Image 1 (cartoon, rainbow, N blue to C red):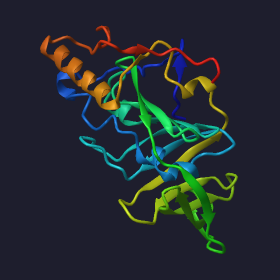
Image 2: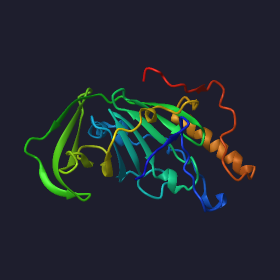
Image 3: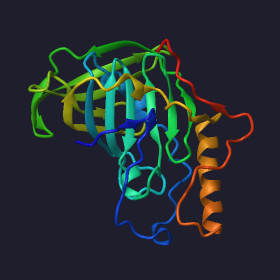
Image 4: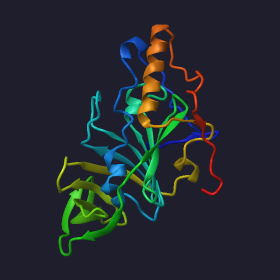
Length: 260
């Protein structure tokens, strides 16, 4: 099972062996990688929250700039708070490449976190869900992702008067957990599949930036810093990206809120 771990209060860097040399891998960081996936800060997120904590592997049809494959990764959920680690972090075959995203659906805010930079940036959302309605009598029996499911149409209404409609496949043998979501209303269609489901509440500490990480004003500022440092390291012909440079002027160091 793909999992996300913290060690000594920090995100644990994935260790690779036998990786190709840096000159053959290309850039680890690209503009756009800092954007939080829309299934986290969009209306679909209310269908992924549950009173029971869980971990799952997610595959989507969302494509990121410069990515060779659709977005996928590990998703953790605890009482409406989620952590998503894209598989692209591993595909790029170097410690800390890419971002990890934390999202609080209750407060409509979160963070983009970079282990490589030992930094994070806040992300805010404007979505306010007012009602969730499942279409009566619309359940259709199907097999999805290896599970017998019932498909139904779910309408998520928002405070601004708009609504998003989804087809939702709930697994009969997984406490009616949604193993597939598919947008069925306006905008770009999105399909989200969930597998390798484990019902267990992840640790509370996973849902805040790690202690001591530096705060950047925006995810774009965080990504720009990553790109600048990688470019500088490459020009010096150093073998590995190091996040030992001082933080930018005015940056804050995260300290956990004892109340959370």
